[in-house]
Structure formats: structure tokens, C-alpha cells
Image (cartoon, rainbow, N blue to C red):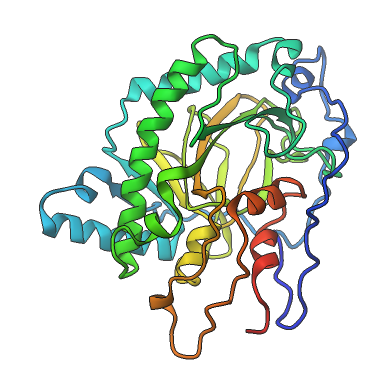
Length: 368
């Protein structure tokens, strides 16, 4: 995991210079299906780290938010749920969302059509390769092969869904399924963000207005983690926090996500027909650190394919969010975070190595 530099010693800033074009790589899916593969290439092998955080055996369940109560017309039920939502953001930064109203068949169809995309030929998938990290459709492997010194055991498809909707041309059914799914999920996100706003003591639409949520940048990230013959040596994705306000994730039945909680990695076992939600860096900025984005990582296994689909919801591309003035305590500086347009923040993270919370540290004004 990333370590924070001591006060007064700013971390080395990530670079916004455009990296060289990524080298042409075989997908991890194709590699995993190589006949007789019994070990992984050295480019995928991570050195063992003696001081890495242990995996927790905690029986403490991840918080669950009943969405139907969050939008309840009963003020007592809603107030209680908003308090629970605030506690989940404060204590974990992650929570399950149940009874959200998105049909289970729609969620399963989204997972299935993403699986169909990854089953396309390398040539067909290659039609969706992007040239820049802000291209609206981008297929690839690892995270950013142009800067990754060790590659991650993961293929991905990233697609901008809002304010302008994009879709790969294949599979043919992708467009209709993704359009319906992203629209329904966006509705769930808005209600949760309103609840988060109220849990902070702000007006319910404060975050919505401050981030121009009507024009939010919604990005779908479909991840494929094939079976790995040496899972103890590889990583699906390293420890990182998410950009934006709120990520809503669904996955197939294979476990692989770990969340850092109380300095230990906790395996997450999703509840069927639920979203796994987590707050992003821009909630940490808006709340002036009262709620913090949390490190999480993806591990792999030697048996089963894992597919996860995250919908990352951020402010509008040109919005530059800052701490809510009413959350600042006496003596706290409102300029604790340097203003940066959201699209520039996304570009900063996507153009560099995925490294803990390094992007958030980059815009934090140290020593204030």
C-alpha cells in the first residue's frame, strides 16, 4: 500500500505528461488459456513484501444499507438509515446496498454481456483499444502497461456512459443492456449521494449541486480476472482508492475483492442481488476528510474466472470540487485541497501507476 509522506515533505507528484503508446500485449485471458501453462511470466510476478498488511479473519460484517428505507416516505425510517449510511462511510468507506430496485435479471445480463465481450477474438476486442486514457471506449490489459513495471493479472473494458453514452459495437446486445443498466444505476447513485450529503449535516442536494451531478461523468469498468496458475505471485489490481464520488460494483460468484479495514485486508463476500458501494476521493475532499476513501485491491485464484463491473460516478468533467465551507472547523483552511477539474484528476490517475491514494496526496496542500 502507498505510504503518506511526512508533513512538510510533499510526495513526488505524478506526472501529467502523456506516456508513450502502450506496448502491444497479449490479453491475460489468452495467456491463461495457453496450453500447459503452469507458471506465470516474470513480468506478472510481484516480489513478496515482508511488511504487507495481513488478511483479517474478522467476523465483523460489512455494513448494509437498505435502499428502500433510504428513500422511504417515513421520516423516522429515512433518518435512521441516513445515520447508518454516515456510520458506514465513517467506519468502512464500503457498504452493501440492498433493495435498490434494479432488477436482478438486468444485473445478470450486464455481467453476461461483458463476459461475451471478453470472449470475442483478440482482433474483435482490439477494435475497442483506445489511444488516450480519456478515450470514451478503452479495452486493455493490466492497468497502464506504458508505466506498469509489473503487469496485473487483469483485462478490462472502460466505457463512458454519461453525460454522453458510448458502447462497443460488439456484442450487438451490449448497447441496449448497458444503456438501461447505467441509467438505473445512476438513479441509485443520486439517492445515495443525497443521503451522504444529509449525513454530513449538509442540505440534501449540496453535493449534487457542488459537483454538477446532473452532468456527472459515469464510467463503466468491466474487469476480467482469469484463473492464474500461481495466484500467490500475481495481483489483479494493487491497493488503490477510487476517483470520484461513489462506485457501485456487481460481480459474478467468484470472490477476489479485499478492503483495508483496521489495517488488515478483509475479504468481501457480496450479498446476492446487491451493489457493493464505496466512496471515492472526491467525497473525502467535499467532506474535508470526515469521510475517507478506502484502499482496496483485487486478488486472483487458480480455479475460477472472476468478472466485476464497477460504475464509477464522479462530478461533471469540468467541475472542480472543494471542501464544503460549513464543514470546516475554526482555523481549518478551505484551501486544504488544490482545485483540479475532475477530468484532469481522472487523467492524472489513469496516466500513472495505480498507487494507493497518491493522486489525492498530490492535490493536498501540505503543511496547512
